[in-house]
Image 1: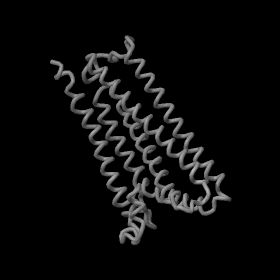
Image 2: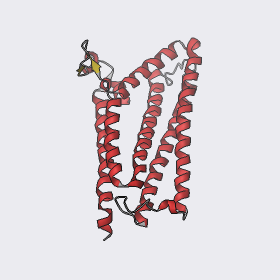
Image 3: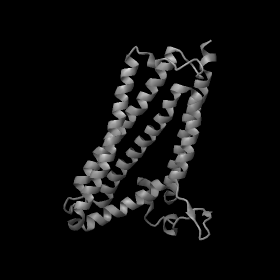
Image 4: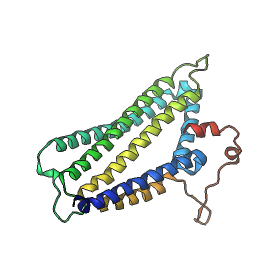
Length: 246
């Protein structure tokens, strides 16, 4: 029966993706509720302060802004190029008749049928394709901010600091989403060798991302302590508007 050959693929691969999805949903809730306990919220707060500083002293810091955005665009362009090249390679593999689409050997766990092999490559192709789209839109927003941050003061108040910060945060959110899709695609790449590796690598990826996504504070003795928010954020005296825009 085909089910007996593919039951590991049907169980372990979706389970690994669900674990990653649930982690990111929980992370998003943390960014909304306790932004300064996460790297995403802390960096977003720093970018808001940076934009405010650049716009208030634009005559002296305009070159710094342009160079910073140029470096950011270069990084996103590199990742977007990598994603679309991988998409092209996978598309070539799917449309070919080479033996590379066949399993390495019969010792690999999971399904070996033509449908299952094609499903592996199509899934990878979709992940890299959506990653490329997110990187491209992120570059678009950064280019907009690159122009607007050096504009003269708008007397109508349309090009305000809040508006430019909102555009910049959209760019970085899309960049973060693209990065996470790219990382998830790397775990799915191991699906070629079997579904067990996909599940183990997904759990390992979530563990690594947890240590990278949260701010870990230490006391004077070097012990880890729980992150404590500033009272002004908990009391909601004006910083919550920024938190909602992250």
